[in-house]
Image (cartoon, rainbow, N blue to C red; front, side, top):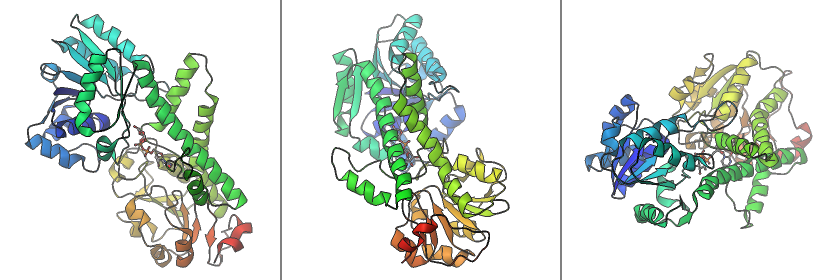
Length: 454
Ligand code: UDX
């Protein structure tokens, strides 16, 4: 099939490249000419495992092209995917500016009947609005389909090929059938429904996953207080198939380009129809608090952060991406700097991106070793494989006193005990084998000290 994709951001690019890989002829459009130039040269503007290889392969095979010209992009296609960003406005509502621009461009340029598929996450009712907007600019017949994406950054290519479902919302069975056919080589179950329900499935799914995370984080905070271990609790809960074992990893809260934006947008959407979405408001609230909790723990441990060297390991909102949007590291580091600490940050991939967001005072290290060598305290904020597999004994060897605050529960408690480090994690008992000999350092959870040290 001949396919156009509008927007070469994370969703558009992954979609375009994957569709070209499964045998379609794909042309991707973006107003950013610099990006188009990079892509034509086989360079991906985003870090996403496997993406660049697939991109190069399909450019070489003549399956995918890139352009900044709308005329060229829509001239020949049968299906047009809209995959532009819908960032959050200040009030949490979805900003539809880029979407409207894309829709107007499509409307002005289509010459024959085409199916217009919305991949961007849009509030319920937006596809109907898109339809009306197109009708203002053209008399050419067209069909509208809602086809939300469920890709996770860092494993987007894997998800494209192994997704749990493809949701197709359409008024017309014929249009839904064509889009279903287009995805057939992926062999992923397809669920066809009406447009509004498809739009809602995306928001409801993200809101539910965010709810799971905030729930387990609250359980973790309770575990901290009652001396239970959230890892054991998650495992035990996950054995119940009605609950499932995914998205029960306690930590420093969710970030990224989707959960924070989509949960706020759903609260706003509910508000518009006079529905107070109390549960989701609480989920957002818990998440905001969770991000700061690690700093609170550090502050309890070290009386003052002033002039303390704090090594931060991991900056991106999750591993395998350089995406810094809504990363927990942003609020945490901002607070550390505000309190007068010197932050030495390390991330395997996201440093260039992080520099655009973080305070200028932050110092960047080229390796974990150089980040921790003079550190008073280490904070682990992203569970990159390199960070998880870093030998705990190294902390002991390189730091004056190995005090680690792990916001992602990267190490097992016996490992930490064996290494003899002072190890604070989320919702799990403190490990503290070494003797506290600094007057300025006061251990938190001192009541649990005896039960956790081996
Ligand atoms: C999410 C959805 O998973 C995806 O379906 C949707 O299309 C886009 O939003 P993404 O934001 O890329 O994907 O990453 P995801 O793996 O879902 O993680 C989101 C955040 O939740 C990360 O900050 C992650 O660290 C956090 N998280 C996830 C937890 O804290 N605990 C968990 O158990 C899972």
